[in-house]
Image (cartoon, rainbow, N blue to C red; front, side, top):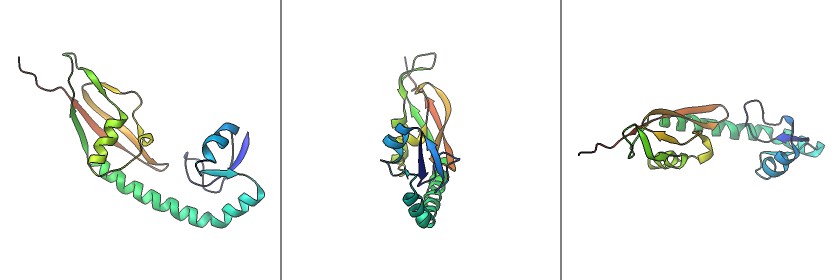
Length: 152
């Protein structure tokens, strides 16, 4: 296990400036290269405590932006017609990319990793997909999958 000092709030129980123990690979391959943490040396801890206020201010700004984005997403409803069988099973599916593209078309830019779809949607009906925009801000997008009207 490696001790690191957290530079940004993520995972609901990790606060900025807190020292946590994580697996070596997680620290080496994800946290440190992505600027989310530094190794917990005396010098790094001292440095982070001195810039903690600016990090907290930056986090508050990110949270405000996430709140605004969440309120925009809550107002939207994603309806899409996808060809389906008579039993409602889709010939295709709805994926995270489709959701991100829909949001982008509505002037909301988010990363794919924020959308918590689980498995692709493969049948008609109404769904609610969670979107985590910040460790303290999440919302859901209502999705309706329709079958196009076919005339025979």
